[in-house]
Amino acid sequence: MSTIAPLDRSIIDQWLASRPQPSAMEMQLQSLGISPEVAKEYVKAYRKTLQSRRQTKGFILMSVGAILGFISCVLTLINPIPAIYGLVLYGLTSIAMMVIVLGLYFVLET
Picture 1 (cartoon, rainbow, N blue to C red):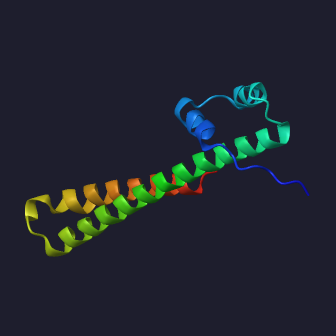
Picture 2 (picture 1 turned 45 degrees about the horizontal axis):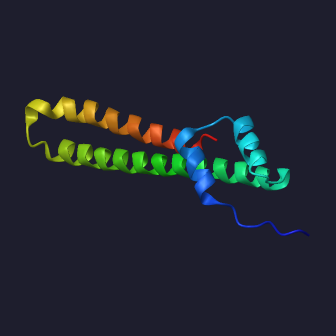
């Protein structure tokens, strides 16, 4: 079994900034003299990095939504200002649920 040298993170970071097409990534790696097997590993590492960033964004959105939902629940239970009861109960709770669902989309969609 052959061993593959560690990947150069600067190339992957460049791709994250410019978001090139997969064919352009392979052409860039071929111009650097990298073998096709290692080039596939670079593309795989790039996609894995994109997915991890997307999941991180999703977990942050789910946390924000959960905090908004908790605030909405507490404000609904204590009812500090009766005039905004409906706004808090329906408005803030709906916004919290939408943020949570958006976070779930980012985490679960592949």
